[in-house]
Image 1 (cartoon, rainbow, N blue to C red):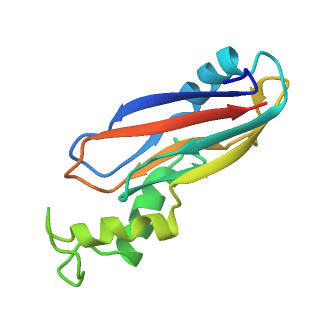
Image 2 (image 1 turned 120 degrees about the horizontal axis):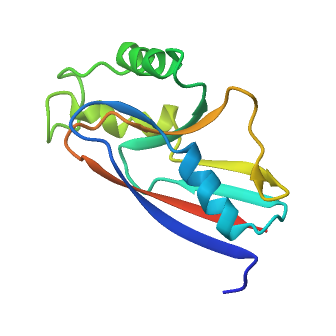
Length: 140
């Protein structure tokens, strides 16, 4: 594979609670090695049926607000057809329709081009799967 395309897989432990995990630092670290100061695109992909990638503000409550909004839209109760796992787990399988499992972001001069308050986050509401993989791919 040429140096125009580079990929790495992160392992992120989310534990047994619903979480929004900021992986911006991991993305930046990957780009320092992969981009080599070049322009391109960073694709962030989580290969799981019950997790997503969001670009949001963190640390000021927006991450908790996102989880709260997901609870309102996708309550963890017995209404779901998909019924294995923890009670309400079926809603975790609907999550990627609202928080997609991917994001493609611009890279300029080897750096992630985010807005002032934006962070790249893994969103995981599945309490049954504490370990997630996230694939970072740079296309220069």
